[in-house]
Length: 201
Image: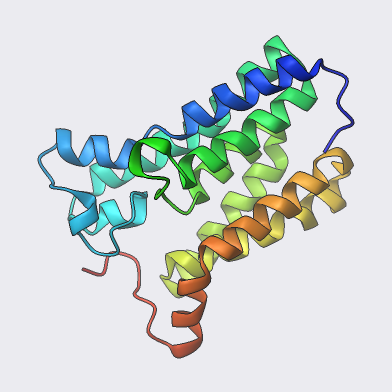
C-alpha cells in the first residue's frame, strides 16, 4: 500500500466509513424484500450472490452481485475524491472486511469476491477488468464459482505487476490471501471433488 500522507484521523474515518459501507448485507436485504426467505437457511448459508442464486432467482443474484461490488467501488471512489489514494486503498480494504465480517450479522458475512472486484475496478480499472475476465473464463470452463473466485483473486497481484500498479501490490496480495482463507472450506471440497457447481441447489 502507499505510504500514508493523509492525517491518521482522516484515514481512521475512511476506514470506518468503508467498513460500514461494506457491512451492508445486500443479499439478505434483497432476499427478504423479494420474498426468497432467509439466506442463512438456504444452501451454504452465505450472504453472497452465489448463494442467492440457489433461491432460484437470477435477478436477485445479479442485483446482489452488483450491490456487493458497488460497496467496494463507492468506498474507494469517495475516499479518493475526498482524501487521497492512501485513504482510497484503506477504505477499499475496510469495505472488503465489512462485507466478510459485518457487525450486524455477528461478524458472519460473505466471502468478499464481488466486493473485491468492485474495489479492484475502482482502484485500477484495467486490473479489475482482467480479474473479472479471469472469473468469467474460469466459470465458463468449470461452472464452479469458488474456483473462479480463487483464480480471479490470485491473478490480481500478477496483473498489478504486469501493468505497473506497484503501489497496489501489497493490498492485492493481502486481499488475495484473505479470499483464499475465506474459501478454505471450498478448497477442501475442490480437492475432494465435491464442490457444487454454479446454480446447484
